[in-house]
Amino acid sequence: MVFDNSIPEWNLDSFYCPDSENLKLDLAALEDKRLAFESKRSLVSEGRKPSKEQFLDLIKELEDLSRLSQLLCCYASLYFASDTSNPKAQSFSEAMDEKMAVLDNSVIFFELWWKELDQESADELIKAAPLYDYWLKRTRAFKIHTLTEAEEKIINLKNATGSSALINLYDTITNGYRFKSAFLSDQSEREMTREELISYVRSSDPAHRQGAYQEFYRVYAQGGPLLGRIYQTLVRDWNVEKVVLRSYQSARGVRDKTNDLRPETVESLLRVCKEKGPSVFGRYFKAKAKALGLKALRRYDLYAPLNGQAETWSFKEAMAEVESAFDQFDLEFGQLAKRVLNEGRLGAQPRPGKAGGAFCASSVPNQTPWVLTNYCGYRHDVFTLAHELGHAVHSLMAKDLNLFHFHSALPLAETASTFGEMLLAKRFLDRGLTGRARDDLIFHLLDDAYATVGRQAFFSLFETKAHQMTVSGATWEDLNQAYYQNLQTQFGDSLVLSEDFCWEWVSIPHFFHTPFYVYAYSFGQLLVYSLWRLYEREGPDFYPRFKAVLARGGSQGPEAIVKEAGLGPLDDDFWLSGFEYIEQMLNLIER
Image (cartoon, rainbow, N blue to C red):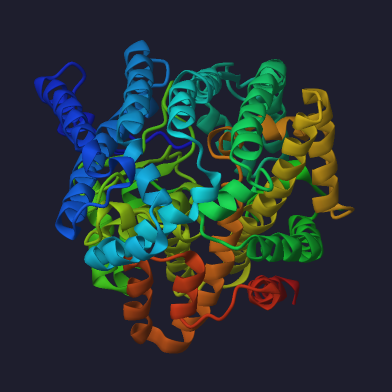
C-alpha cells in the first residue's frame, strides 16, 4: 500500500451535519410533506379518477416528497459508510429506515390505486403526463405482484427492523474485521483493514499474495457461520415475500423484472457465460502462468502483476491519468468527472471503520454524486477511480430527467463506469507501450474481463443455487460446498484451487445487500465491448450517440436503449461478440 497524504476525503458537512439545524428542519419538512400527500387520498379513493390537472399535481407532489426523502436517505448511507463503527451513524441509518417505512405506508395508496385503474382511464392520464410515461407504465406492470394495502404496510414495517437491520449488522461486523500482517515477514506485525490487506493480492511476491488471501479467509472463516446464518435468514425472507406472497416465478425473477429484462435475455447471458467463460478464461489463466514462469497458476496468483514490481501511483498522479483519459474522449465527459473532486465529493482515504470497496452515490437529478473508494496506490485503484467517476458522469448526463426516470436500470448502470476504464486503458496503450509493459497492461485488462464477466456470472449462478438450497433446508456448510463446486466448474484444470476459497461467498456484500445484482456487471462489460467497437469505427462521431444512451437514465428499459444505440437484439450472438473481443486481447499475449 502507498501511504499518500494527498488522498482526499469527503466532508459531509456540506450535505448535512449530525444534529444540525438544517437536518432537523428537513426531517420536519419531510414529515409535513408526507402528511400533506396523505391528505390527498380522497382524490383517488373508492375508484375515483382525478382530473388530468389533479393527477399531474399528485405526481409532482410525490416527486417532491421523494426527492427530499432520497436526499436524507443518501446522507444516512454516506454517514454510515464513513464510519460503520460509529453508533450515531448506525442509529441514524436505522432511524431513516424506519422513517422510510412509515413514508412508504403513507403514500402507497397512490401506487395501489394506479395499478388497479382500468386501462382506458390509465391511458388517458398517461397522455396528460408524458414526462412520466415510462415510470407510470412500469408501475402498472407490477400489479400482479402487489398485495393488499394492509399487507404492503406490514411488509414495509417488517423490512425496516428485519432485513434492513440484518444487512446493517453484516456491514458493521465485516467492516470491523481486522487482519494481521504476519505474512509480511519483513515487517513488525500490525493490524490491517480489508482494503490494505486485499492490496497484497496484487503483490509481485507470491508469498504475499498467498498470505493475504489466507489471512483474509482465516478471518472470514471465523465469522463464517454467523455470516452464513445472516445470509440464509435474508434468503428465506426474500423467498417468503417475493416468491410465496408476491408470486414471482423465481427468486431471480424479481430482479429481472425490476431491471426490465425478459427472463430469456438473462438466461441467454448466463448460458453463454457458463458455456464460453471456462474455456476462454481457462486459456487466459494458462497464458498468465506461462508469462509468470509458473507451471500452473494458483488461485492466489490470479491478479499477480506481470512485472517484478507492481507499479504504483500517488493519488495526484492517478487523478491526472483519469482526467486526461476522459478529456481525450470528450471535454464534457472530463469536466463532469472533475466536478466530483472539485466539489469535495470524493472520499478515497482507506481507514478503519470505513466501508470497504467503492461506490458512487447518486441521489437526485442535477446534484453532483458522492464517490467512495479506498485508494491504495496500485493500478487497480487507478482503474477503480475511472470506474466510479464514470458512474458520476452517467448521473450528471441524466440530470434533466425527472426523479422517477433518473436512475438507470442496474444492467445499464455499469455502462459509463466500464467505458471509463476502457478510456483509461486506451490512454496507457496510446503511449506506445511495448514488450513486457504492454503485455502487463493487457493482462490487467484480461484480469478485469474475468472479474467482471466470468466471475460475476458464476456469482449469479451460485446465487440461484444458494437460494434454492436454503429454501430446501441446506446448512451454511452445504453452501460452502456448493460454492467450492461453482469455483471448480469455473476453473477446471486451468489453475490450482485451494479450499480456503470456499469462504469467498460470505465476503461478497452484493449477495447480502442486493440479491442477483451481480449479473449486471457481466451485462455491462459485454455491452461496453460492443460500444467500444462502435467507438473504434466512428471516432469522435460516437460521442453524441454514447451521450444519448447515458442521458436516457431510466426513462426506457435496457433492451429498448440498446436497440436505439444500433447494437441489435440481446441474444446469444450479442454476448458471444463480447467474448470475441476478449479473445482478441488473448491473441495479443499468446503470440
